[in-house]
Image (cartoon, rainbow, N blue to C red; front, side, top):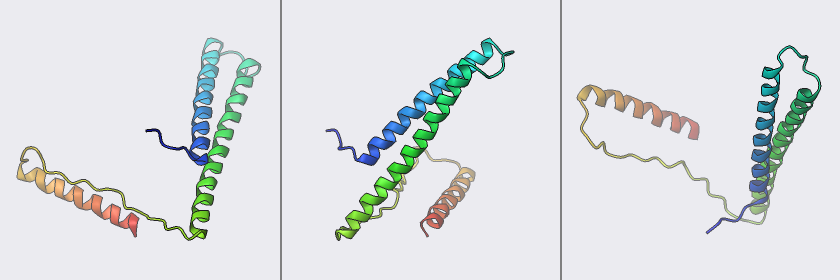
Length: 124
């Protein structure tokens, strides 16, 4: 079943589309410059690059608007007395399929301790 898209989701989709189009235009500019490296960056390749830059800037603006739309929806929900649940990221711990030598177990344990410490520091 498809999920309903919010206004912020639509803005972010449009921003992704603009970025994709801009990357294609930048690629075309590079291809033009490879075919004719001696020419100065004027004419068609400069126009295309300018268009791509405008598309990148528009994508950034859409991302800003999407973030603002999420914030406004959150604030409106809170103002109406709604609750907001902030859930921690899920941590999945699974048993190894095969037993590892003791030397690797100590290294793995150290990595797990560091990862958990980083998560707890971010949460604080």
